[in-house]
Image (tube, rainbow, N blue to C red; front, side, top):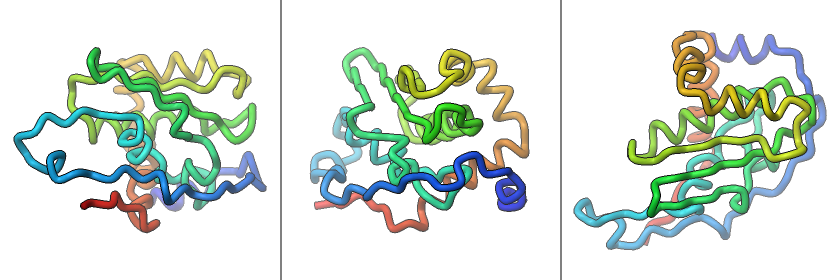
Length: 173
């Protein structure tokens, strides 16, 4: 069913630029970090590794391959439990920007401790409706309402689940 929803969407960016995926920048977990009792701080690389492999809702490519997400656009304040993610839509009038941001939010909601306040923003000057998109992505009630929509949730889950088939893994020592 979700595949049918995505296939029925009219392509907005028919020929996107594809960027190389970074292999060298994967976070390497230490033995201490793998121990259950250790306090694990969160860094930008860990957050980037969580979101880089999310599939674009319009193309069979990852957000990293489309340069929608970048390590430099992940800001962490672990001490104050704050995370800021900025992303760049592939085109200034991308109708998928809110869906992409929602996918990022859901991945982080499912992966991070509840102590974190996560802000997700379209990078300044990269989308014609950036303020409206940012408002939607950072309003708890709007996000909750979106996730109650079963069809939308299916699309989000598809974008998150297909990432696992791309061979992305965190290297462990």
